Length: 393
Image (cartoon, rainbow, N blue to C red):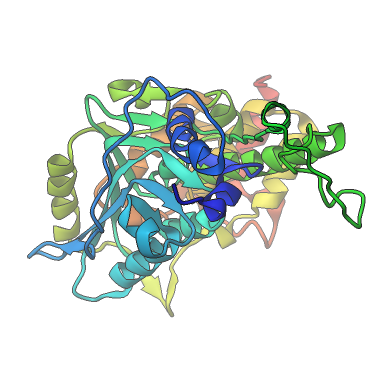
């Protein structure tokens, strides 16, 4: 059987944004090809998929971009034809769709258990930024786990089917120690190296404590990036994302968890997107910029004030509004004594409207004061102070 060392380097000793059950399947297929026997997982190994075609564009100008299979940074030859989906290809397709005047909206058709870390955060930023140009919806058309969910979360609205799975927002690393297997087969490796840490992850010797610490540090760094990106995309706090503990949510479980907005199939998501793009844009542009943006509000001053006074609820509400790209809504929420949970629901509902792409260009009527000119006169600051006098924590 042909050895696949290039695949081994992409699987072992590197953080992956992939569902554990998918990783088990990959390991069961890969291990025998590098001389290691691993029991096959209970889940059946999926059949090889044919090479995919370019993304579909409907007659009324909706681009349907599939995010399916195992997600990798780059795919070549047989890799690309065996169910792998390249971040490079996806980025090109999404950028093409977002800049094509004939395309009015983008639907991300997601069916993936995730994949590699390399390249995914750059692609996630592209998805998030592309929705400034055109409406982008996403549907979990079976599975949207780990890295695949990160990409789906960048859409303005996420749909979950009755049997769909979403979440698994976590990072996993596998180190393969074959030293015991080597001993059984009578192999003894002599590893020469310059640089004390050069052979840290060699599979033919047990993992050292220093090497383990290195892997754990990178795992935690990657997890922090993942949590931050999903929190931004979904207008949730980082704490809320961490509290999912990388659990998987199925069907309507994903909505109260904040990971989906509506129940629906690919067909219903496409129908709603068509309705959204049929409406004329309501955004007001001046000189290429929105008439009122978050720059008219001194967000850092608000954060600093909330932190210094210890108003945890107010601070979280402000942070949620900033993450949602709607800082102007903080004033009204605070003035109405909204809880953080109320604020989160309000922001999710605002983002879920058909003209979500334009919401960020509107600021609530009572936020007209330029906080940069005088932060003390900011209605948001005054709302924080009112909460403080009422003893809200």
